[in-house]
Image: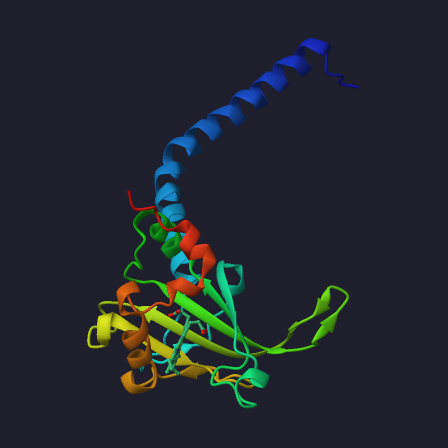
Length: 212
Ligand code: HEC
């Protein structure tokens, strides 16, 4: 019976290794350039996909993934301090997309493309082992403010405002609100900070570059 000698095993192993190395080197030469571009493109697509999507007729689809964005602040207008029904009941949790946040840290400005999400939730309990107070209940509503100089070139300061409702189930897609319904109050009360109520978001206050 034919038996491989120790030297021929070593020789064959070497041949296989050389072939493997060669094929790695060859594919290594031809593939990387295309795949680097593909990778960059995929990363770019992913970054865009991570923000918001619109329907063909310009409605905003219900945003997803924003709970992983930067949580900039929490406001509460409880019903029991607002004649039984607050205009925006009750907790308002505000998130900002991470790239715009990074830009805000550098410039203290809301860049073109900024997306701010305000998620509403109810007051659940008013008592907990930590004391009496307001404790967050269930998610109830969702709103968005988007600054886009192309898509919303006719809106004041290019901000458009969207509301998916204050009660679940939320709407799947919504048209932007009228200027009178949303922009106006933001413009009247927060014009100095580009329509955003920055003063109520401690994370943004802390992130803004300090003026010298
Ligand atoms: C009467 C004034 C007023 C009106 C009208 C108003 N807002 Fe606001 N909005 C505020 C205030 C004050 C805040 C600051 C935080 C809070 O109270 O929720 C805010 C915060 C927000 C935020 C978080 C980002 C930011 O700009 O501070 C979003 C998103 C938002 N509002 C969406 C809307 C939408 C959508 C409408 C219209 C349906 C609307 N707002 C109408 C007063 C108003």
